[in-house]
Image (tube, rainbow, N blue to C red; front, side, top):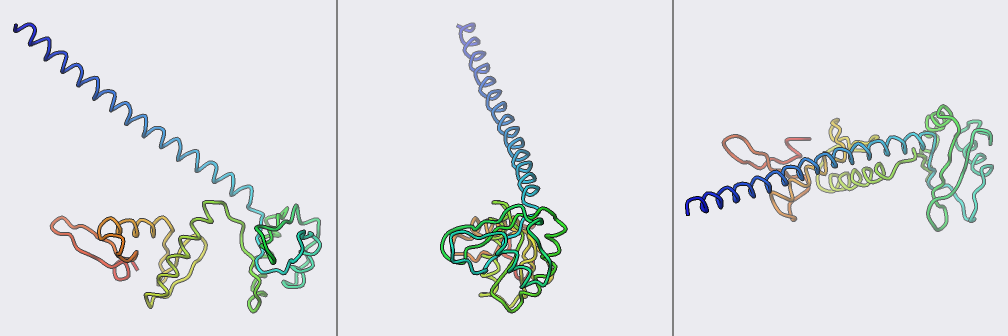
Amino acid sequence: MNIQWNEEITLDKLYREIVESRNDLKGRLKQKLERENKILKEKIEALEKQNIKNNLVIFGLPNKHDEVTAQSVIQEINSLLQIELSESDINNVYTLGKGINKPIKVELLSFIKKRKILHHTKQLKNTKIFISNDLTELQREEQKILRQHLKYLRENTEKRCFIKGNKLIIDNKGYKATELEKFHSQAIQKEGRRQSPLQVITRTPTQEKKISIENHYF
């Protein structure tokens, strides 16, 4: 009887050890896959940035026809920016999206030529035309997040804010899209979906208190 009881205990212990070992293995495998997936995404993003580093996107340039030629774009750019761009500087030109006055992507052969064009975009100040860097899918999503927070801030606060590169500048301090989304996520988790995206909860060793991002972070 004691032998049978001991055998049951031993088998039960062995079973628990097997389950724990399997769960531990699954956890470590998941972490490994997550790390590898993150590294792979970072490599893909780096390759995409490299592939588009010489590209520009032009917004607001009239183009009612289905096809936009390199020559027509060159003429417009040279006229607007007072520079000398030739067909030998361009690899490809094509429109994005549908409708009239579609954005135009310009693939340049030289990064130096691209920088020259961007340097002269101040000539577009009083026009409806805007020239910007080409962006990867991830960068476009980040810009969308920055614009959402910029809109909220301008409508609900007196803060001086604007977007510069991949950051939202608020009272001379920059915040990346990931930081702003972290603040928003914390607000939702702690206060519910009706809570302002500019409200977070921070914990101290002795108490939990509510701190406005407007007062604490910005």
